[in-house]
Amino acid sequence: MKRIYLDHNSTTPVRPEVLKIAEPFTKNLYGNPSSVHSFGREAREAIDIARVHIASSINASDSTEIFFTSGGTESDNLAIRGILNNEDIDAHIITTQIEHNAVLDTCDALTKEKSIRVTYVKPDKNGLISSKAIKDAIKDNTKLISVILGNNEIGTVQSISAISSFCKEIGILFHTDAVQALGKIKIDVQKDNIDLLSGSGHKINAPKGIGFLYARKNTPLNAILTGGGQEQNIRSGTENVPGIVALGEACRILNTEGKELWDNVLKLRNRLESEVCQKIPDVQIIGDKEHRLPGTSNIGFSNAEGETLLIRLDLEGIAVSTGSACSSGSTEPSHVLLSMDLPQNLVRGSLRFSLGWGSTDEDIDYLMNKLPDAVEKVRKISPNNGP
Amino acid sequence: MNNGNYHYNSTVLSHIASPQNVGVIEDADFIGKGTNPSCGDEVELYIKTEGEVIVDAKIKILGCGAITASMSLLTNLLMGESIYNARKISSENIEGSLGGLPKHKRHCSKLAYRVLQNALNKSKKD
Image 1 (cartoon, each protein chain N blue to C red):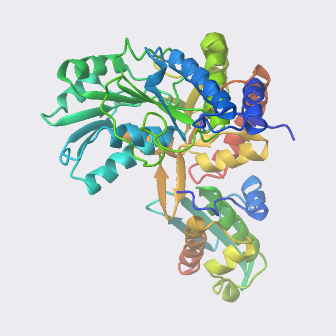
Image 2: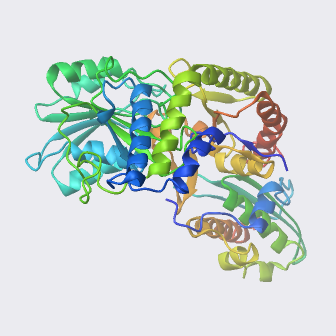
């Protein structure tokens, strides 16, 4: 059966050129970068090159501002936990209701572990965060503001520079979870006054299990793991050399070809949305249409259940995600969609289509060949439709 | 929360792909409706009898894959069955006939059971 992958926000395929450059580091180039001998030196050298490509992808002023981690979740944990000192027992953090769980659950845990207080700023109905709402939430003891750059579910891109500029003025640290945005939109940590930024490999066609945290020079950051003191004592643990090399190569490719790639993906995404709106009645595109990642489309199909639609598409070989999954007797609609106060009918029938490297017009042809029928069939069995 | 057993088996998937006996019976003898308030699933069950025997059963569903499969399977269990035996169908029977549901979806077979009970306890003939 033909298989179409429209779930690039979940994870992406590893590009062959990325795999090719990383593979020797799983074979003959197996040295530990901390070793003094030649085996170690060649691994260290490869890591340093990767670090430069990554720094360049976000315009960091120095590659030593890049710290490798196991992925986006660890980077978010390191950023949020790492900036807190022992004396910060009742510091205040501002974040948003549309963050990834890596940020939300870390903040939540800190309210229990310490007496950290957290303000979760609500988005508007288009999934945008107002910089004024963030500013209004600032207290005397606000230590960190963390705002997701590109949302994983609806793709909305926040105007973070409006927020980070007053953070800089007041002296509050600014972190952004850029896991979904990295490589897809222009990021400039210097111009945008970003102190901390999380990135991940497997969202940009590198393997799973590798990510990084950018921390601007002199940002006070404490390790959350203790051990061998790798990564300037910030992240102990022998470096994932093949993963780092792969992530570096993925960034290098995007630094040169990213614009062309995402311009094409944007055209495909726009085609998908216009055809869905044309061919299927009672649908609504969720999230701000202008400030959005190029490959993400979240569409609400009224009077249909997202999970049932997802399975029907899956049985046709089409992979997508849903924002609504009923679990343990209670629907767990995505916290992102809930925070936008959307009608329940849309939330429960929401599907996320996410495109990326390798997506083609043929994928959209195939999807549009199957989707209208799948939606019609799911709607047909609904009590709200006639017999 | 993904705790391992998250995927539907092939029997469940085939019911989701082709739900059995979808529709409404205008002159049904028994009608059951049910919702799961917390998850918002809405289901309707229509039963037509001749004497004590169920000759037709139809369903309408707005809900997830597990409730779709549970209701679809239930109609198969009901067809040709006596009302007496239909009353004895449990959520375990439904789930068992489906070959099991993921743990976090078991409440769906319970909703199917409740709708059946709701139908049988409130006959249109009463």
